[in-house]
Image 1: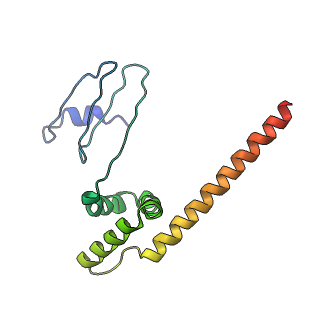
Image 2: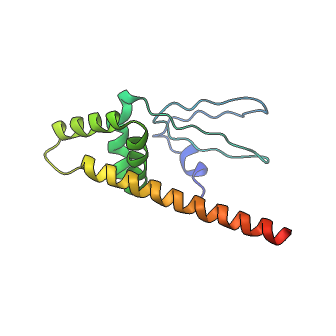
Length: 136
């Protein structure tokens, strides 16, 4: 579905339109919805960055908009920075009347995700070795 025509003519939405030329970089601030229309072959390099101070609000939005991605994000974050996830959980618990994901569940998800990634890596290595042997 083509989003651009719908938003460019919507008077409720303030639009900023620009033409990015080769070699230029465009910074889109956190929380800004945006549409990109590629006029030619393009490569996009994106980085979604979450500061620790943004973690609680980002986690709430992500959990409501994409629960699966939210679980993967928190599991990966727990593997790399468990103290941030523990602080987040503590903050969410203090501001909520119940529910939420427990730290033990996050830790279990992180371990399951790591196991899954290892299995996929092992499978890919096995396939590559098999292809190499066939080439010989």
